[in-house]
Length: 301
Length: 279
Image (cartoon, rainbow over all chains, first blue to last red; front, top):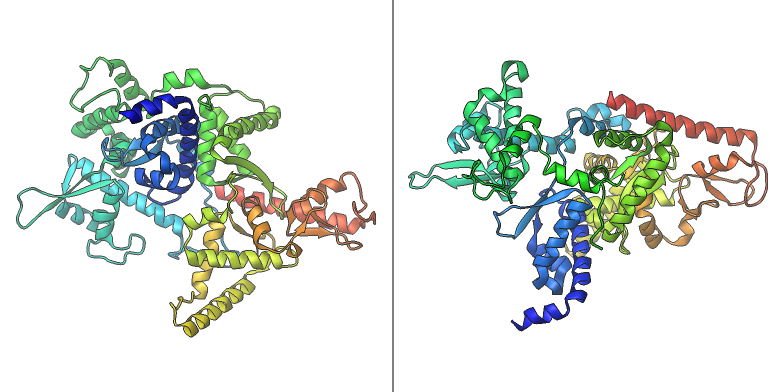
């Protein structure tokens, strides 16, 4: 109790200190957390390395951090553990733009000119390795999604076998230990869930989308990806997968406005998740977040 | 404090540069125009420079609160500008690197940095680097054997090449475009590691440009006195004068033409390599 009144007395001092700490947190997040491959921001890391003795104000500091990341860097903080507030990730609030992406990717060889030819079949090509890992993630997510959001591990491994990826392979050229990659690495990163099916003996396991995948990757984009594999827009349209399409529309809407729609089963009844916004996103295929409010206010250019 | 905010176009641009770490002049302009188009901001080709100057100034104004800055620098070989985002802290920039690279990789990078800084013209032959690194690891393993401590694994030629290429991919090192196998520091490294280089090397190993006072590696020097210039500084200077700014001795026409020629050919070669990759 006394702590409360104390902090109220020092409200002004605290506020500038808190925003200062928040700025240091932003710097830490952008340069330290993001340079690690997993891109996970941990509350304990922030407290230990940046906030230190102000850690009891974590909540108010983090509120500033979120504002700064959004207003200055155009990024959003997402909670990776379902409101537990321990691990966070960030995502851009801008839609992925394949045109600009092509301009920025520098795929020309920046190595020693004498070894260029050699490089073509060289495992040193790190860029390819990380790309392949993302492709594998996308394939895994597609498999799960197309099997109505969970897949028996047996079927999962058999499907991957067709891509010449074997569960038993311990030293895959890019993935390393294949089994560990899917059942442990991606699970730790929050992209997949790997659980035992209750009451099975011998135990059988199933894969599901992890919480992070739900936040970072839209089901619509996964569905589009699957359609592309099936032969592009002429042979396979997303709408043809009726169940998945309905699912994609519903879930994506939930992800876009998690603070507006409460639990997932509220469809259109909630007064705040208006029918209009559903239609709008449906037509525009837009992944941008709450676009109108933002763009009208802050263009200074 | 709370009204630090940027327009969506600036946010988007900031994300790109955070992701890339560094942009060269050519890509910078292409991206800038495309970002403007994306956010439906009208512009005229001729007005582009004052626009991005203002654009960058506003970004820097906002991100300085987070100890960051977008800085411009020049490549010593091609004279092209680079833009990169750096942290404005007192500690050395190699601290950032340690997040991204392993201890062995950093050890190798430090050795390469040493060789480049101590070299005559700021570039080192690949084979020389290879030999130096191998002998460095030999010495280390000998020491380790003597003291019974952990024996470090000596990298093979191939390991070293892979590590060097990793640093090239990440824009720290670059092969001189029209001199195969000669390796020098990339524009990004010069911007980001400037402080660090000043800290770890004795002052007599470093030379500074007579005109802009920044560290110069690949220099253009006067034969009469020990004055050194950046090649791109020299190019700008020769538009006005022909005499050495320090000892007033005249440079010969051959010297000047040679400099201009090598700069522009390097620039063209670089531009070609960029465009061929994008098509």
